[in-house]
Length: 500
Image (cartoon, rainbow, N blue to C red):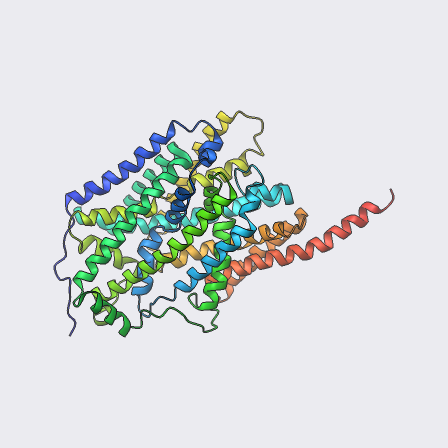
């Protein structure tokens, strides 16, 4: 017989709404407080390169811990057949960080860069730089649109608690617009400096929220922690390693370690969204320290969120009464089964995980790599004004993606990481080509096109799991680029040697 532990939900109270509103207002205040120091484009995008390494480390953690992590990762362990095998992917993340510290970060600090794609221009020319920058803008707009949508699911539940007559679609749309506008305002005003300091705040808020939720779940499950561990063990929730060689499954050891390594190298090593944070420090050593420390925190954090998923399984017992959508289970608990006041704090924690925006990085890329090459010799004041406009446009684009995806099924974490793997692979490949001292824009551009074609074909026509997309895209780009470099350069040398 199924015993329901939560027959009488606890409704949210006005104090919860006040807590959420106060948090969003606090974020806006930080943005406008930082506005007075945004005098140049380099300060707007790189915070004057004076940020301490520990703040950058916290910013990396907050950036990596989006609402997708907060909401969707517990759902991974909660789901039917779910367990801790996601951690195999995190092991790949740690390996990727080590490679980044050795291969990429020192190169970024040898030049005065605003975006990392400027490095590609010096090696391969403007066409390759523009292609890589454009791919980043498209990928980041889609991925962060998904993140915004998932966050809005939580906020929509809040709206419907206080205004039951509002439909789910309308409540979600209202939430997307509200959160998106807050994100836009504080980022457009305060630039990267505001982003970093608010992200440091976010880490503290959502860590407190996650720990509070875990304690409440343990106290609500019969038998407490022991009872939850027993239920999780019986359902095989604590399995962490799966050494089967199945290319169609995302959470097996080989896909996790190899695919996770390549994915992390691309997202943390060749993605302006993350690398821009490293460039806010004073040296490559401090940037590497920030990245490695963040990796340890992320490992512990993912373990914690997966364990919350096991606690949710023990609380709801879906094996006895039916599963709800994995991405909805943690929001349901936060909204309906957490005492007033704490519910508002945890909801604010989810919003905190969403308001780590990429619009500043998208604007930096659009300005430095696409706009400035076309509109030359203008004052820095002009480029600063354009930067704010581009920030707003980037935000509107992400809001549009989120609105367009309302009602889509499936796990948000799979969707977001799948998109990142799909597009970041070819970008990683051309950076690897650059690190190997290969020259020639034709070789690099052809390699990137081949990588895009290969990974798109794999995505459309094969059941290959998404962690392998970054591997396919990067290695195809690297391989084709190396072959083309060997063919094009001798041909060019032979042509130049012929007498006129």
